[in-house]
Image (tube, rainbow, N blue to C red; front, top):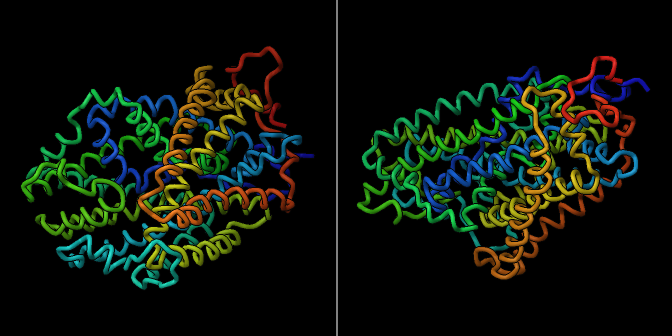
Length: 534
């Protein structure tokens, strides 16, 4: 059978492509730089040794983050498909059941999109609230009571109009962007939003540095506590932060890499994406803690005495309180929540593209068809689950299980299957070196295939034990069983069901390019000539 670029059968639709390397890099950075960079990294660093945390953070980046990022790139680019297609082709004709691992990753993205969109809707609402500081003096009471109308840990259908309306609008915008496809939709939005995000957040950081008490906040963040390096939990926190902030191991970078042209540098752009993401996290840490220093100064307390230094509490309770007290507060609030919304939206697009691409390839849909159908189903579920009075508690629970159990398990399975079961490490290493200027050696195989699964395995087991023994946030056991563990069960069942459904066009008539060298040839041999494309 004749094949098109990258080995795709000619009977299939031509594969969408990024317009070039810059477009891909901006989209990948847009995916990696999300809500967690702004509201998670500063607090995690502060609680785990301050300035000393940079050491385990960089070690985690170099030994796990970048190696797994390269693994995702190699899988997506060599096998030219979203996660289900890539893993099916990875296994060849004899291990087609590996497709289920890809669908497991797609389902993770599907569920994350349901609640991630809600947080973006909150950010958009607070962007509007910033103009008149509508949250008043009791920011916690406003957020939990007036805005979200939070109830008990239950399955409520009492909708909150202030959340539902912006949520529907965000879903509509996301569907429109996805319907335009990879280059004209996702890439174009990232090309616009990412520079705006950098400018807006840089302006916010510069403003924060001139606030009273800013130096105290920076000292609190960056003063190193080297004794913390002896605590294994600090190292686990570093690996967790890198792992969750780079958008790795749940289909995003596999899908994004599959849209690159066949002759495309992979490793050098990967380094750019990884270090750009980390740079933004450092920038976020500076801005957040300079602002927290001002807040502590205003209250006459130390930064250590402040509460709500991470997550939802930092963004929607602590920061509004700060904005209300600072000179030019409305402008600061507009910049902060505008940045939060833009960072969240570009990450949301990457998560949804994983789902859209999986269904496009399985069922022979166009980008517009997939965006409309996936978007409509997702919007309905998102509204039902997260725009009600139980939405905040449901979001907190599902997010914990999806990230700490689902994504970590996915990464472990991908590493074990690829390197230990199928022994595909040399092939993927060869692929990376064939198309890239920065070549990887045998140490990459050890890091991605041995160290990362071991570290992540420890993280997974320890987290499961804690959840089983201690529960989570004091929520009822029945609720955690239904919403928390039920989320993991959904991932598994949906992955198996989707794997069992026949393909509209079989993905198996495929030969990876470039072909592997003859036995005995070096794994870092150069790219073959055009005659080897087949």
